[in-house]
Image 1 (cartoon, rainbow, N blue to C red):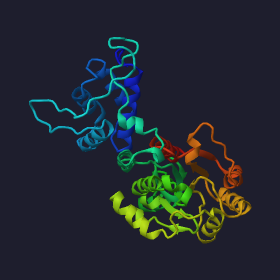
Image 2: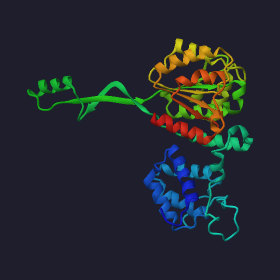
Image 3: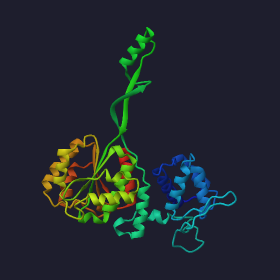
Length: 361
C-alpha cells in the first residue's frame, strides 16, 4: 500500500471491494492491493480518478463493468456520467472530507472518508429515515451470499479418490486388459439454509429488512434456501421470495403472511416445523428478539431437537448489536444453551457478516 493512502482511504476502498465481491465482481485481495497502490499516485478526493482506478484494477472481465458502475454509484452515493473517449467520467457527489481539525492540519485532515453509504452500513435500521432505509435495502438487493458446501451422495470422475470398480472393469472388458484404474469422488452441493423470520409486533422495525435479506439469500441459492415467517403461526414464504424484483417479492410475502405484528409462539412453530419438515444437515437461522409469548420450556425442548438435526444453529437478534445487551427474555434464556452462535441483526454490516458466516460455516 502506498504511503499516501492512510487508514481512512484503506477502510473505504476495502469496504467498496467487499461490496463488489458481493455483487459478483472479482475484486479479490490482490486486486484491492493494486487499487491502493494506484491511489497512492492519484488525487483520492477526485471521484473521477477513484472511479477509473477502481475500474482498471478491480474488474476482470467485461461482464464486471456494469456491476462495477452500479456498485460505485450506490456505494459513493452518486451517479456516474456517460463514458466518452475524450473526457473522464465523474460522480455528482464528492467524497466527504474527514476530521474536525483546522484546515491544513496534516494529522487531522484525511484525503477521504467512508461515504454516507458506508456510515449507513453500521446504523440501526430501526432508526433510519425512509430514504436511508431505502438506500440500505438497495444495498441488500446487491448482496450475493455465498454458501458453505457439503458432501453429496453423488459421485463424479476424478484422477484421485476411491477406486471406481465398475468403470475399471468395463474398461478392462472393452480393452482386454486393465490399462488404467478409474477413480471417483463425492460431489459437493450448497448447504441448505432454513431461515425463520419473526414478524411479530416487537420485530416490526426490522421485519422488512430481514425479509429483504431473505430475498437476497433465495436469489443467490434458490434450491438451497427455505424461508418461513414465524409469529402466531408458521408460514412458508420461499416461493414468494423467488421473484427477481425485491419489491414484488415483498408484496407477495405481505399477502401470504396472515399474522403480521402479532405475538410470538416460536416453540409451537418449531414443533410444527420439525413434525412436517427436516433441518438435517442444514444451517438453521432464527431471526427474532426472543420475546416468546408461549411456554419457554417448550421452546427449549424444540431448540434441543433442532440443534440435534441442524449442522449449526444461528440466532440473529437485532438487540445483540448493542454493547449492553443481555439475553434476559424467557425465549432467549431457553434457546441460548442450544445455539452455536448469537449474532447481531440490526444493520447492513451485520447482515453482511451473517452472509459471510453462511458462506464459511
